[in-house]
Structure formats: C-alpha cells, structure tokens
Length: 374
Image (cartoon, rainbow, N blue to C red; front, side, top):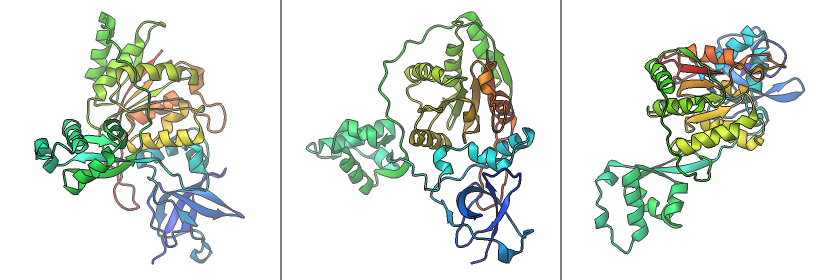
C-alpha cells in the first residue's frame, strides 16, 4: 500500500501542521487520528495530504490509529477555525482541538449512542393493513403507524407496544420498511402545547422584514427592553426556517442559566424539532452526544454558549444571538475571540460540502441569515 503524507493539526503551541505517514489507514480530511509525538501519543486532526515533506520520508512516523468510525469534521468548520486562529493570532492546532468536546480530545473512540430508524417503503405504502390477520394486532398497529408517519424510531415503537420492535422486523423482511442506524435523540418529558400568542404590529413588521431577507447573508439588530417580546420573534423565525427540509438554527445565549428557560419555551412551541443544548454544565458524555446530534443534522435547534459557534452544523440556515451586547461572548483566555464577530463571519461564508477523497472541494450553497438581539 502506497504511503500517503498527511498534514495533521496537533494541540501544541506551534502554528504549523505536522507530517505523518498514513501507514495502513485510509483516512479523510477532518478525521481524528492518534499519532506519536515525542515520548507520548496525541490526538490530531487530518488537514490534508502532500506529495512531499521537508522531513526525509524515512524519518516520518506513521499514525498509530485512525478513528474511521467517527464522522470527520466538515470543511466549513475547519476553514472557520483556521480563519479565527489567523485573525486572533493563535496556534491553529490548539484552536481546533479546544473547540471539540473533551471526549474527542481523549485517546479513545468517541462512541455515539445509536438507534434504529425505520422508514416506510413504496411497498409498505401500498400495503393494505386489512390483509394482515386481525390476531396480529401489533403488526397491524406498527404498519398503520408507519403509514401515518412514514418513519418511526425505536422509542416511538416502544410506545406502541413492548413487542413492536419484533413486529417491525417482520415488516423489514416483507420489504414494507427499511432500517438504518442513526444518532439516538435524547428523550425529553412531553410538555403541554403552548398557546400561540398574537403578535403586535411591531413584532409582525420585524418578522416579515427578516423573513423577506432569508436565503442570503444579512444581519439584523433586534432591540427591545426586557418583556418586549423578542423571544416570540425568535420562535416565529424558527417556525419559518425549520419548515424547510434539512434546516438547522443556532441560538447563542450569554449565560448557562438562560438556557433552561429558553429551552423550555422552544420545546413547548416547537415540539416536532429535536433540540439540544451545549454548555459547560453538561457531563462530558452528554456534551459529546449533543455535539454529535448537531454534527449529524439530527438536532434542528441548537442552544449554546459562546463555544457553540464552532459546532459543526451541516444545514445551518439561521444564527440568533441573544443579548449580543453581553461581555460573556468574549473569550478571555486561550484564543481570545468574540463569538458575535465569529458568528458574523460564519453566516457570511459560503457553505461547503464534503466530496469524496482527501481534497477540499468547495460547493457554494446558500449563506445563513443572522439576528442579533439586545
């Protein structure tokens, strides 16, 4: 197998990439790898490949391990952190690794929680429930539920019956349904549906003007005193954006203690859209799981503090910064960035998509919109 020279970013105070050999591993750009560094091993991120190195090839060391089961970091995120490190004069490798959940900086596979998702096939759509014997009540119920919803998770199957998982496997064998493993969404307590209040004239004007600018980069400053209804404007904007297929919204908050209240409002008004939070009060495993849900696109609403601006979001359409004037958006140590300013850059940069292989090919798609609120 031909040896490939990999350019790898490491969490060290040197603003450079390090050359290693791929060994027997087949890796992608953005992949997490384990490499020897001095007398110890260290986690790094593959940033690219090269045809040659300043170090004689016989002196280059091969990587120890490639975590190929993990989803690589996307090009857009890598470029944003590269820009931020350059702008704020900070070593790129340290900026990149510090933006990741703690579990991804540790020398161990980042095991994600998975669940099976079952989708209705064309054959299942055309199937007649009445053709299933009436004594097979669970099988009939599962097929009816699939025909109504088109897709069911394991958790939703459990709500139908304790034997619903066995029944859905019968439907898979009949080609009435297909199955795939996806990140497991967190279970949340069902909340009573909230009554949607009427908007006043100012709120209507704000919502209409912002929606009219969607699909292109534009930043709005929404100014209002406490209790003036800014959160209701957020919710109406989220309702509009999330109606699109494959859309995500990032909501930045200055303090952790603001997260539960905002999360509860969003869950009661937007119960059909998976929501995760990202902040330092989460355990390491919780933060990793929420981050992975955001990275995969499974989470549609992401609420987090300043570091969340570096979360990979493949379908980001809108960034909302609550209380944008708050000084908590300024990181005071390590890379001293301002999350509001980084958000402006992120929203305005062309969207980038992965292409197969080790090259960074760009595909321009829509930019995100942005609302700053004070």
